[in-house]
Length: 225
Image (cartoon, rainbow, N blue to C red; front, top):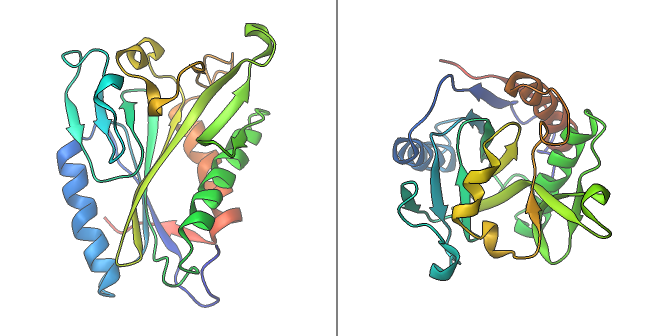
């Protein structure tokens, strides 16, 4: 899933503060069109949202347990319901898959490897599951076979350019996930790096994500502001 040799580095941008959801989607829509037209570079955009729920294209209404708890946004990404909020790092990944093999399944697997590599820098063993998209950690402290989700993946591809992306739980309020059935998956919990007992900040997570991204997808550079 690396870019072909000679491709320019992917731009990397960390957005300060909280970013409202609808303007973020509008920005992605514009950037994806510009990448597809050859007018802009690939971009990874790291944001933090205020508390909200998003519904992907496969969302089941029954999985929205508390519809009045936070704003709910219908979105074109794949997947079901998820929560975004302070303390969670969302990375919107706008890559030209036309140059990277035109293989969406391989792209999702690469996103999982990216997250697993970032978690490994904190000595956390993230794992993928064939029947569940995202990244999981085993929780023997909760019982035999217990697993919690620590990162979610939901993407869309237009004109072979990806958008939406991943979310990594660094230190969100985990109780906010109770307003939905996260990603439509029952019988498993949700965790975060801090919940696992690690004093990790968003800045720490960003550094780990960037290092792992380079290993999986190739070089990146600071975005022009």
